[in-house]
Length: 369
Image 1: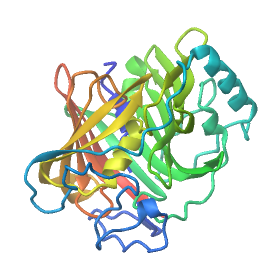
Image 2: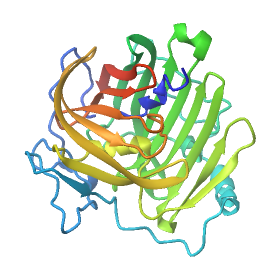
Image 3: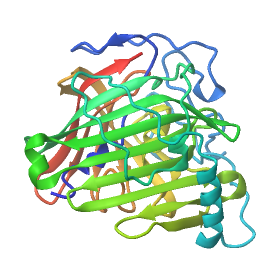
Image 4: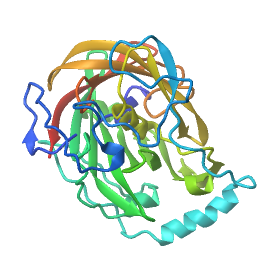
């Protein structure tokens, strides 16, 4: 059952600015204000915002919103970051890790607040979290499609409800002159599962408000007897990343070079949410996960109508193509995500085939404040 709750899969989803609880039918989103960061400006009515520095190459047509001819669009996040003169080593990373720990503003992460009735919470005690997790949160006044958004999902193994997952945009974090959305996911196994395979996973990602690239991520997994904590900070200005990983032994330093600004597994979902979608127009960007940097291709498969406990939605279907094992899905498995066909691109369903059967996540409820 270990991969059952690709419950870290909850790590994949995300709104606007009205203080209404969801109804059983999807609501019509208000138009976004014009005074928002350049990275989140609305283009041509209800279309999603596009990345300010993301340009297709001169010989590749830009993504369209109406029936383009099939093609594959390489979408670099930005100009390549400066290359380090020499290899960046774990020993050098240790110095940065110690510095960041010494500069933590808070002694514990900001307390979470319930967005749903009977919402499950997970203790942060005895977890090795990123230093960025110990920064205070500021109100989110950007009015991005995912601002102040909370999503609740049921996790199902075939027809059995195995747990509940939450994904929230909890506010803004400011550090070293950069401001980022704090995106948090938590996943909890159902009480009937706890006795045989208890899951309590927490994931954080920090998405830069202006450039829509990742400042870093933090994963903390507790699945049965399996335990793993891992975090990375992306220092694109100096062409490097660093962090720590801990399983049962003492933590070890992680280090590597960055070729350009990147995304992590969770922020990649938000990047896709901010792009125009069209069948045949692949979206490609660089991602870092477990010390490896590689391009991730997201294929746009088409449109479908989806029924979930939260209502019926017209959706785009996209398929991220992973090269390695990710927090969504085991290596070699295919994950499909259903995003609403509106300016929010809210993820309402995910599904992945496993060795026997399938695992899916379906939207139970959502709020936008």
